[in-house]
Length: 263
Image (cartoon, rainbow, N blue to C red; front, side, top):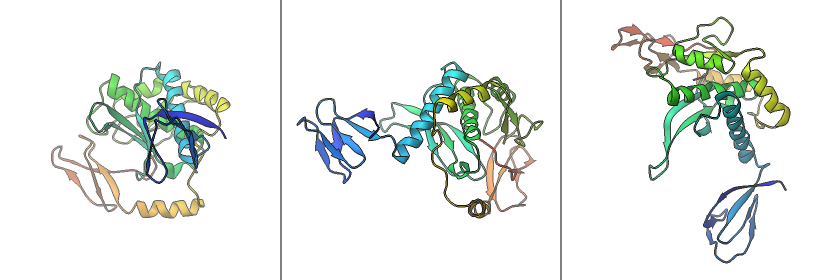
């Protein structure tokens, strides 16, 4: 069984929740994990287990693109899977902290709802899209709210992704909701090809069911539409075709486009 050392613990908890003291030097094995006891105790998980396989792949992809596209200057973050409506992914600054408050980390979320219908390259492009948001958060000047500004657009182009509000060539490069195109033979395209040539199973699991099943779920989720102020980026949710306005900016809120975007 393929295994990888994950983390050291001084106290091991069995699958039923009962802690096992780690001072007797005895190795115990639970289903799906080999547990070592003693001063250097650790849990070694089967890397074919779905959760481990999924998150190891995303963690490896983040490290790889950080090295190839960002000169290894991005800090670690917490990668999550979230089902946000009409979004392939999003970035959230300082979203998580340790219980004692000593460490704060950003979140990059990917939406597994669309893994099945998109290529692995497209999903990894969303990861890099959100890494650009993280780069701007730490090394640039992000705009207020969710607005994608000119600096962010330049950072996207620098890694081989062309910003586009429509997700197609020629779309507007700035605004509250902006997706991207992959530049042919650009930095991301070449780096991703190298990664996928040497590492299989980067996005190993996709949502089950037919495309029609997924479309039905998507229509149900779309019963409420996101509206965004083009001035300050404030968001509101309401039924489709509801007229909303921002009193601070004196501007009408814009409904999110039906086409999927990234955050």
